[in-house]
Length: 268
Image (cartoon, rainbow, N blue to C red):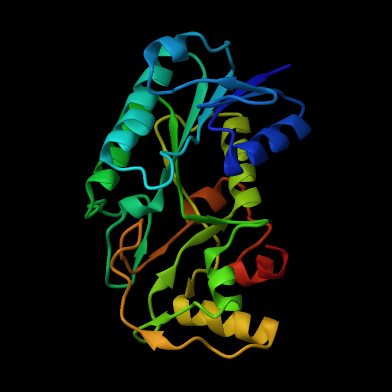
């Protein structure tokens, strides 16, 4: 039985563990503090990583913590990837990065070949961690904003009357359902020829504008559109306007169960 180790058994990590378990893998999760069925591991600590069990595949999807700044990013992502690469030289390694590394602001269609010039130091740290993984023959999965069961800031704000359409609402909202992201990781690791050194965007197939998202929810939930207002320039992932393409991943045979946010919104 093949063995999977997931570093960061949280919202996404739990779903990844479930998908691999269903696929017949022996799975083990780890988090900073551990817990029921989980190993305790500070991925930024070389000694802690050295103590992890052997695995055929490793997924780094740990989070920096709420409000995590540059120091937390360096420890969890950059140092964490360095430690995992050193500890698991023969494993299939997938690092879940972020589509926030793309800094485009003019509505461009963004592929894995597009320029990555994030406007924040945290984004530059994510790129440095990606480089560590790619040079070691791992795979980078650049995830759009996660949503899923019990987790959708857009839906919560809309239903609670806190949503605002920024300016004319033309900004693209790039998202991915948690379960589709987990299935994408399973797909990449399970490929007969592991795509070593490759980057894949993991996002919905139909990217909606902010106004399109709220118009869809207004129709589905029978509520009025939110008011308009200025841009929120303090967003954690930064203010960008781009349409992230998942074409490269789909060419490998993966397809999302939820092509767009509106296909899933009633169940999140």
